Image 1 (cartoon, rainbow over the protein chains, first blue to last red):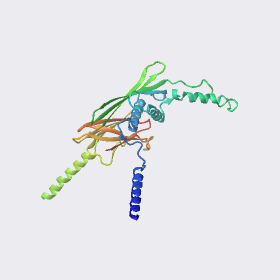
Image 2: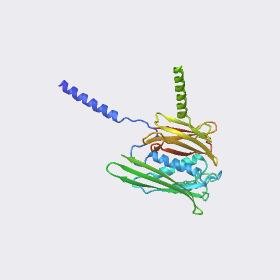
Image 3: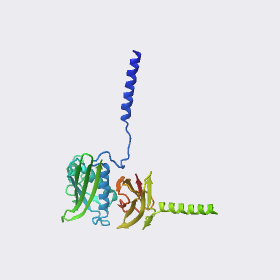
Image 4: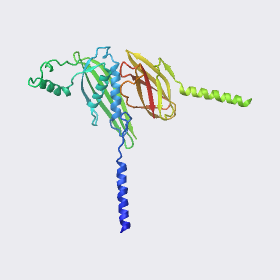
Length: 191
Length: 125
């Protein structure tokens, strides 16, 4: 009886230890190369955002001191997988803002909140009207940023090969002229 | 007589070997333009480092050689420094790089803003 109890006890302890070990949590390098799977990942997002930002920084669009006004539009996802393309444009916008050479105006996605805030401030009962934002003062963007991401996937029983192509452009809103375009390629292979 | 001569030849050979391993050409070099290997990185040599400020933005061109007979996958990133030798902005992400055997690959990088005057390239396996 005692022997059987001891065996059951030891088995339970072993299971508990195994589960405890396999659920270990650790911190990793957010900037490290991530190759957990072949899908579009954090390293790809960071690589694309960095290359695009640096290219835009030295383009003809950015002339010393002009600080062009840009609005960000969608990066269309033409791949077969879900990719948060807003993450790409958000990172590019943040990097460019840090550089201080361009400025961004409210984009379509944030327009509703912007209008809501302006309208909220029109309430004379609660707001000092000398300090509130008046309607009709928003500045229009001189340029718009848009793009696309496409992929070609080839697979046989041994190998999967994914090729991504990310293309971004900046268009002059007034003239319709494309002022800048850049392309980044990524190839991932899983054996 | 024979032993000192052998020692001398050996020393000269060692110095030549070490020099060829640790020195790469710097054209229009940054003040430092360092290249740092993080951990063991086999058979990857730095051929040259060039720094060119253009329109006020520092651009860097680095040539890397895969000196082995096998394909190599490495990762690299740049750090950027202002005139006071302080790091600019947040650290970059590690970017993967693939090299064929005996291939010389050219990395081109642009500083994140107008303040950068120097750079450091880190390479890891």
